[in-house]
Structures are given as C-alpha cells and as structure tokens.
Image 1: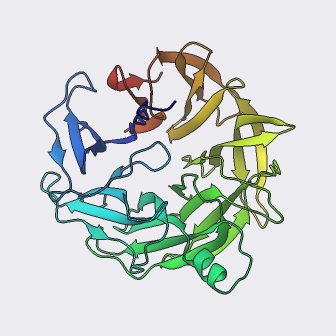
Image 2: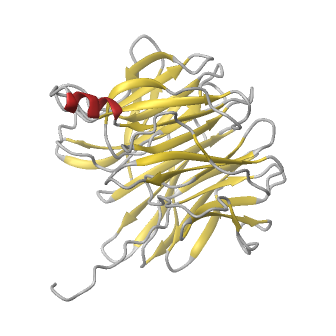
Image 3: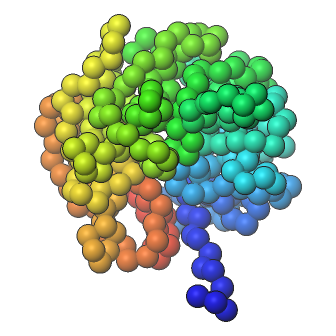
Length: 369
C-alpha cells in the first residue's frame, strides 16, 4: 500500500556438512559475509561464527541459491556461493578454501567469463581423487542468441573443474543448452565414480522436466539424458530444483517437483541407468502442499525430507526406506509458524540427519531412525 515500506524477504538459505571429527558445520549469509558455524554437540550449541570472506561482498542466500559447504578429498574445507552483480539476475560463482578448516584463503571466481550476466545456482561436488567440480546456470548463450536475434530456450549449464582440491580451476565448459533459469542444480557420484549433475531442463517445445548429465574423468560431458517424464508445460521457472543420491548398490534415487495431471507435486523415483533413462517406482511425496524435498543415502537407508504448509504452520516431514525405495515410513519431525529454509538431509558415517533453519527456532538438527 502507498506509504508502507516493503517487507524485507528473509534470506535463511543455509547448508550443513559433518566434519571428519563428527562436528556439524553450517554456512549461511550474515550481511555481506558468508559465516561458518560449528557445533560439537549435534546442534545444541554453536561456536562463534567465522567469516569465510574477509572482504565484504554481496551474497545470495535463498533456498534455491544458498551458500554450499563440502570437504575436498585432501581435507580442505570448501565454501561456495553466488555473488550478485549490478544487473538483475546476474551473478558470479565464488569459492573459498581453508586448508586447515579454519583460515580461508581469499575467494576466487570459479569461471573465466567476466560478463555481468547470470552465473548462479551452483552445485558443489567433490570426488575421491581430489577433484572439485562446480556446475551452474549460465546465460552467456542466451545473451549471444539475443544479440544475433535468434531464439533460445532457457539458459545453459556450465561447469568448471579443479584438480588441486579447489585451489584453482580450469576454464569452464558447457554441459548442456536449454536449462531452466532459476531451479537449483544437484549432483552425486555414480556407482563407478563418475560425476552426475541433474537439473530442470526445457525440452522442446516447452516441457520443464529434468535432465541428467554424466561426466568423463576430465569433467567434460559423457552423456546428457532426459531423467523425468511428467511433461510439465509451463512458460516460466518454478524455482524448485531436484535432489539426487546414489546408494551403495549403485542405484540412482531422485526427488523432484513437477506438475502432473494438472496438480503440482513432489515425486520420488529411481533413475534406471541405460541407453535411455527410465523412472522406476515413481511415487508422490507428501501432500498437495509438499515442497522443496531433499534426500540422502547411507548403507541400508534412504531418507527424504521436505516441508509442507498445513494451513497454519509449516511442517517438516520425512520418509525413510530400508529396502532401496520399495517402501517408506513417514515421520513428523518439527513445525514452525515463521519463515523457514528448505530441509537438508546430511550424513555422518552410517547415520542420516535432517538439518532445518527457521526464523524463530534457528539451526536445528534431527536424527533419523
């Protein structure tokens, strides 16, 4: 209304990982810094935070485009984020490394392209041979098409590879044209160690299903295949990316949001590998308001977590499977009546947990059975 200030949108986006010593690390935005928090008692108390970037800069921290945290194979602690630039929806992918897990080197921009365009929604993946791969949504090809007055669907997915644990990156390369513009990218390690990246894709003429890319050892593309087949025709981005995990038997599990038969729903399915990916065991996750599901696997366990508004409060719920996704048991985890981030499923050795940040309750960690 005239004369009223616009409410500031809550930026609660956070990521969590367990350190080798069992402590829980969380990264999130505070002003113009990415802050690192530590807990040695599973989230009951937290140490004073450490600034990842000593020099202030703009930080994206919504649920789909939050800071990320991971460990390189050599033990270095990595934090990535998107730095918004001057133009709307523009950004740069940034990464900082702490060799000792405490003191971070100055952040570097992962890509060589300096254009003030979209480089956003990065996914951070580390491999056992000390590679670090970041993949993100990139609009350089869309901008080139506009300059040439040519049609171009959506954006593109680019990736950059580090062979030294995130200290430096090789020039980026394109994984695929025609990604969706504002859905998070997810990643996992395939059964044979190959990197996998999954994102919402714009299939002709305008079906916003998902694609799965498998990479070669050098980080270039081996294959890109359609991964979901709900055939959602929508002229816009749903801001709702997928999650992917590969279990100890090599089975690929995924959760995603799509519209099917006229209704928007969260779905789970197994992505059977082969010359043409097929979805096995697809099922609905949660009720009609389920949103932003995440998943992870541990030996003999598969966990999915999501949030769902019940008309009064936002509920945090989970699904657990002990038979590879053939059957699930549902559990209620928590609820809040304030703003909240998306749920994150994290693993410590053989145990799975759900991490959730809410406006009123802060950082919370829930062990799963």
